[in-house]
Length: 479
Ligand code: ADP
Ligand code: F6P
Image (cartoon, rainbow, N blue to C red; front, side, top):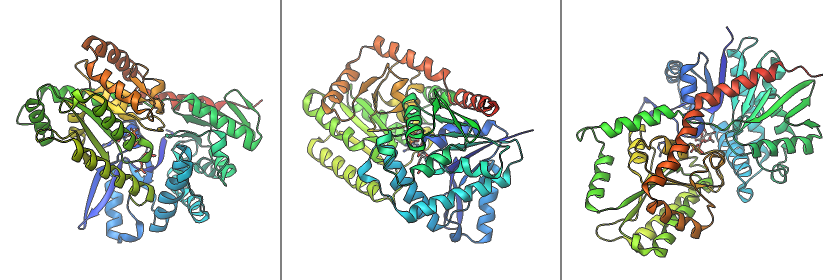
């Protein structure tokens, strides 16, 4: 029987050696959390990087890594420190990530980074080719592996190859600035089906193929190298039942089983009569609009001072790509902003911003989702944003309001949220007020519509629609 192999830079688990002990943690990020349930129910394997540097492990440690990964149906691509520096922190996260998120000023094009990107994509190809049989399906994910589809096809044309991009695809005017724009497109065109979260990203890609490669395109079919390549949008969903059921369980949990975080939230809710919680959850990334969010919360408190001591922003940021200079600057800016605002506005009984810089276990994440009256998801640019969908899935009592940036792919599907421009503080301040004062029946009407859509188009449906379309795309014969 043919199998499907998932390939992405990061595996669903992230490994670390702490004092010689191998620690296995769930990875954060939309790709890993989203694909996890699809993978656990499938019969295939997942190929990716373990999070460890190859030369820092002895043979026993490497064997332990392979065994731990095999339990998760995963296979590692060994990367050394140079690869991690130049391919991961380098080309992937200081060239492609900022470029594709419209942060052109942060984009650095370095030849050594590019060379490493090519080399590491080839390493991924070598591992995948060892794992496949003729006729298998390979589903390649995200911007770290844009060259992989073509590398696989060159060695094994019997494979069915799908590619999905989890981040935005930029407009031609931005993409054309990349010195290796031709090679990147060539790499992606090795796939039979190329998927994006939104119609706009797909359109930008088609425009780049047509203008850079001079290929004629018929609607969403590209005729190239005697093949037809399909391009389409597939908005990614979440494992709705997992979040929804966890929230139902939370509602029934006893006093003794509550986490410390939950006890603390309860304590503050009781002591601050009528006070409300606004939630913010992201990786610490400059695309997520964290400083803007904090500043707009401060602006809100100053514009509507009657809300002082009545509302708190709980801000959870998970450390991410800490070796990249822009991420270090963002961390410093965030620390300073939170410190200044809390210093300026706090009272004996009230701290306006609760800020956690860490990854939280699933149960505590659910505690936060369930306890928050409002979620602020205001990235300045985001491929999709699954946090917005997770928040909606956990609202089991029909209350809660989502404030969502129009720059997130999710905004295309979640029009019942309060949609804001993440750079417009005045509009955000008014939306916070509107969210806090929204009548219960309006909250419910909006949530019902969102939940209906998000539960129907969950991650399983997303994956099965992509794989169905991939099979159809592979079978198209050029005329
Ligand atoms: P991205 O893929 O850019 O990180 P998404 O919003 O699509 O953004 O996905 C982020 C995922 O990471 C979500 O599933 C979210 O629950 C998870 N996550 C974010 N912050 C944390 C945190 N501090 N602790 C645990 N999980 C987190
Ligand atoms: O969803 C976008 C994404 O970049 C994934 O490709 C990635 O796994 C995730 O965010 C987290 O980033 P990283 O793997 O660099 O920690």
